Image 1 (cartoon, rainbow, N blue to C red):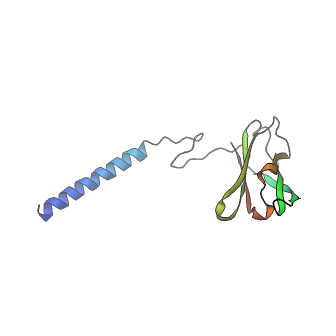
Image 2 (cartoon, rainbow, N blue to C red):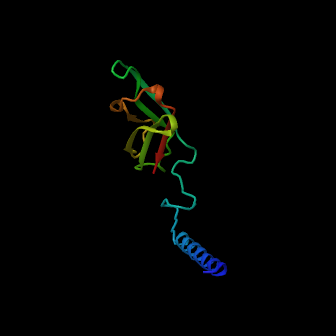
Image 3 (tube, rainbow, N blue to C red):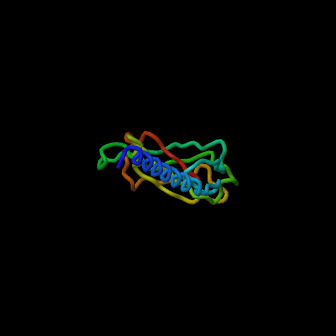
Length: 134
């Protein structure tokens, strides 16, 4: 096969791949109430955010102070009432150390307390606390 034919075939294959990828990307349906590849504004039930604090207790078994309770305050009510809340304790390299999910009361309690006692996570290992209300 001569060089010109190989070039034509390569261009046709390249255009076919591009058209296929473009068609797949165009078929993504993204709305504000769903997550997927793309971008859209997702409405929040709490526009000014929440705050967290936590309690610890000494555990000889764990070899230090472990997380027992995470308190989440400043949850907007009635906007977030009855929604699911997920709290994740995050360690090095953004690794999830423990996660607790709860359904917020109506009206949402302030503070809303989540127990991490059974997780046996050392407080010194926790670098961040992530809160998601959905």
